[in-house]
Image (cartoon, rainbow, N blue to C red; front, side):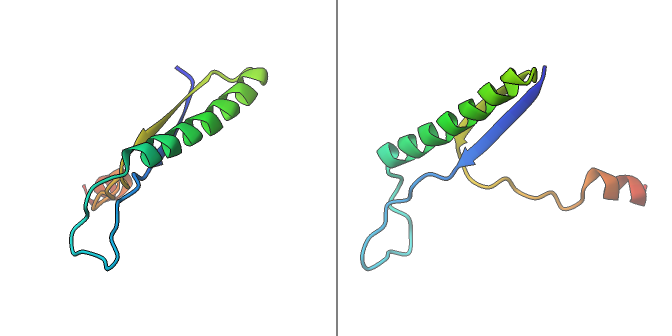
Length: 80
């Protein structure tokens, strides 16, 4: 399988002046450009790794921060 490089790119949120209490949506073009820039960066790292004989792939995706589990697997085993 090899090494997988992943970068999560936060979408650009549209804002107003003065700010509203709810988000208006996402700027699709700016978000797409940010994702592509991240993918290009990761692709460069994958090329460098390949030159060193490392099997790697990459993906840049739009999304938000992953939630943190309430307990890690190690903590669950320790309590069992």
